[in-house]
Amino acid sequence: MDLTTKRLILRPWLASDAESLYEYAKDPAVGRAAGWKPHTSVENSREIIRDILSEKETYAVCLKEDKRAVGSIGLMVGGASNLGLSDTEGEIGYWIGVPFWGQGLIPEAVRRLQQYGFEELKLEKIWCGYFEGNEKSRRVQEKCGFVYHHTNWNKYWNSLDEILTEHVSCITKEEWLKNR
Image (cartoon, rainbow, N blue to C red; front, side):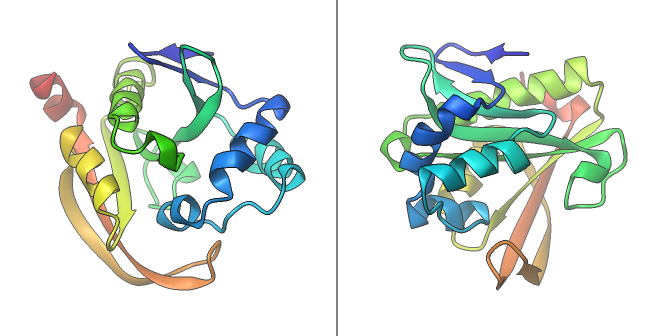
């Protein structure tokens, strides 16, 4: 299923997206901020599409103008989340390639996924987190109505083999409806 916004198409990842994924995911500034190591090759990106990005409710963020994947966004519902959520809650995770930073594309994608989560999946609350120092992600969450909830201090992040501090925010369906 595809979700659309004014400038974006959010669609399932395809094996043919591997080159585009690698182009943006090899940048250390992207992966570390999102909690994973930079991709090492097109084949590595193809494996990640197959093994990770093919999960339910995970979407390639594509520009409408050329339909090329430039980022990713996902909604992990209930037990699929790292936060130990109930089945009526979800967690949004996202990233976008450096050339697209500062254009408001990820807030646009997050708002669409919030709408989908609350209206179609009937979620009651959506969570989102960012690592200490990732001000861009913090701003995305603020723009999209998320409110700070708590901090996970010195949490081991397996995919990076590092200890990081994660700030967690959330928005309820009622708050989202009020702010629309």
